Image (cartoon, rainbow, N blue to C red):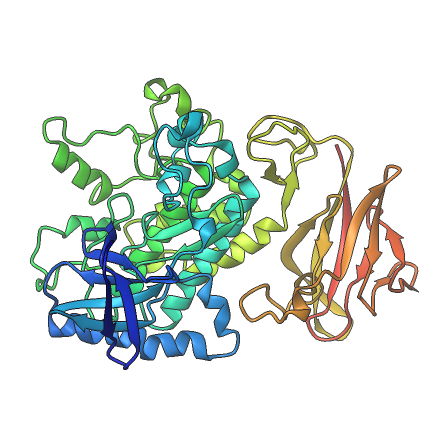
Length: 499
């Protein structure tokens, strides 16, 4: 039986670990505490004074900044943030919470877990490859398209928080973000190598597939060379865009059919991901399109960008993908911020529609504002009347302006306070009271209704009729509904799409 080792952290806490390695990566060996509630991880190689100082800052000042403010507990679910640093028998180490159970494979791979991944961490690589998803994964692990949008919101929010704190992750990839597609959850890990520009340089350049082109292009230069580009906020922004593209479209945005050097695979890879990087869906330069003829059956329909272009992600995400992989691919300052992605993902969630095909693997799709909505994933058309709420908000008394925000209606769809007032955002600052549903939609006898639960000002503006709590209003084309009075209060104009 392995012995239990006791040691002391730099801030004076006593911690214990079972002297048996449970995981070993490129940088660290990991050990469980006796009750498995936390892990102790030691660096494999001797670390310098700067590494020690950085780790103490991450477990001290930065941790305090993250968790001590109002709503700080929220971040415990989005980061696996180390709680303490220590040195034991000459090795620098850290203490971190154990990953929650939902970040471990419950069912693993198909056919009685032939890959032996049951109980292993849910790395994104299993969920971002069309081939892996189709050939290997148990369908119960996969989630649906809505759950990937929700995961995207959480990942973007976590990256935004790091950047607001003046930090960069430096190695953002599907290896360092654990996901739970079935539950729509995500958690950023390996934050002990965070970069503080000008103070703590990066330990690594990143993970292949996620390294920004400017970093790949200059990786042959010495670290001290002023021309060498190292991981920072803008490289995180590139990696985040790649992650989101892969989670929603199950393919890589830069890995197409173009070959730059037929004789040298290493040089070809460097050019493809660096100097000559080109979006596989570039609107005018089609030379890097994915070669459909060479794709494996398991990669369809995702390998065919003409059938499932990036524009299926809708009117808010599509421009950001263009910005990330066309405008900003080789111009880091032009890349979308994590806040841009979070905002667009939240608006996109309000635009999705459940697919009528119960066997559709994605279950949801973005309404495309056409007169004949159709699921792009399984080609099932929507049938019936479809209400859309166009949202306007008050800037001054009795004056409403469009918010470029729409809410799709489906049976069971809910209204929340962030829908009725544009000064409220669905983010980490929401109170428990603000998270409650305030109204909902229902289809009854071919008629759509909005049922008021907790909105004191809900009014049919056309009829100047107050809709009391517990009351309902029929949704008709052109109907104007006042959702809330006062600053930020919203007016909804109903648009009926007859499919």
